[in-house]
Structures are given as C-alpha cells and as structure tokens.
Image (cartoon, rainbow, N blue to C red; front, side, top):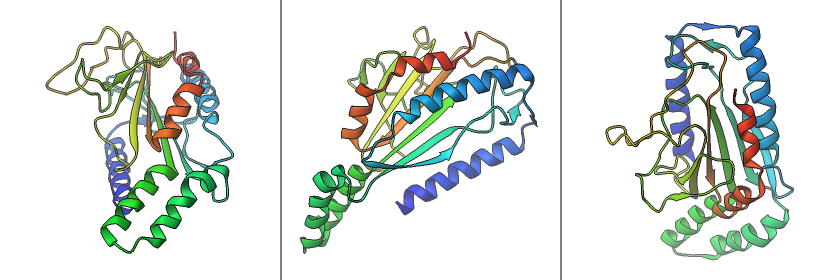
Amino acid sequence: MRRFLLCLAAVLTFSALLFAFVDLRPPTAAEKQVLEKYENVINKTLDQFQSDDWDENVDYSVNEDAAVASNTGRPLDVDEMFQRTYRARNGSDRWNRVVGPQMAKLQEEPDMSKKMAIGQALQALTSVEVEVHFNSVVSIDAPSPGSKGYFQVPGAAMAYHATTNSFNHGSAYVLLFGNWQGTKWDAGKNAYPFYFAHPQNTPFIENVVIQIYGADDRIQELLKKIDWNAVNDGMTR
C-alpha cells in the first residue's frame, strides 16, 4: 500500500507540474454545458459501483467549474478526473464470507513468507479503484492486437486486461469509449492513438477511458452489472 501511495503521489505531482506550464482558464458557456452533461453521466455510472459490502470514497470529480487547458491538441482538456476508491466494509457479508476467513488464516500462519502471500491476497480481495478520463490521446496500458487480453463489454468500443497495474495486486481492466475502432496499433508507443474529429479548444468530448483496479471477482461482477452503454451519452455527438 505504501508503494502504491508513493506512486500515486508521484503521478499527481507530475500532473500538477504539467498543468503548471499550461495556460488554464475558466470554461466557456459551451464547455460548461458539455462538462455538466459528462459529469452527470459519469456520476450515474459510478454510483452503480456502490454496495452494502463496500465503503466508497470519492477521491476526485470533474465538474463544470474545472479549469480548461488550452492548446494541448485536444478538443477539450481539463485539470481534473474522476476517481473513486472502495474498501470492503468490516462486518459486511463480503467481509464475513470472503475476507474474515483469510484474516484468520493470516493470524494463524507462523511462516512469514506464507503470511506475506496471504496478506497480498487479502489486498486483492478488499479494494477496488476506478478512474475516468476523457479525450485521451492514446489508449492506456493496452495489450498488443490479437492477444487474449481483449474481451467484449456492451457499449464499450474496446475492453481489455491492462498490461500494468498501479495497485500491484488484484486485476487491472480498461474500457475505451468513442471511435477507437478505426485506430491502428502503434508499435512504437505500444498503444492505439486516437484521432480527434474536432480541432483543439472546441467544446467536444470524443472519448472516455475507464480504468478499474483491484478485486477481480468484484470487477467481473461490475462489468456484467453496470449499463456501460450509458457512458456514450456523456460524449459530445
């Protein structure tokens, strides 16, 4: 967990430094309208992550008052993202059924190496994090075409197991929304570049990227349960 927090702090520091060298301005009336629509759609989608088994923390959220970065090569670019973190709730059904037995096993195990392995498995069972970005210039942590990492999610243009995992435990998934179908794999970047239809500094959201990390069984449940097709309503048509 300490390593993850250090990595997250480094990413946030880099992002802050990056935006420090970019001109930021208040959104125009048209951009506010686009951001408000996007905010409503994404919040409704992320609200479906809520469960009696999980405690939710809203880490970051995008709203119509977000600062807009100019001249970044994207139609619309802001200095915020969506992020929510979930921890298995102590005393919940999941805790008693899944986490509790592993906690007891951890306490009873005398071998330190085995104890550490159980602890890592516990981390993979007790946390989920979701991040949402828009107008990404490339795909995030995508495997090479034709690999077994890809799967189908209704509403998503592309869905796959991510090649990296900032949690260092559990599973990592990425869902891409928007016109990614026509993009071609760039071997030099190990990614799919996105080609925007609208010029920079225009009030359009053309793609959405959702990253989910953590407990695989919970993520699998969410992939089937959530109406992912609704995410497409958050983009500008």
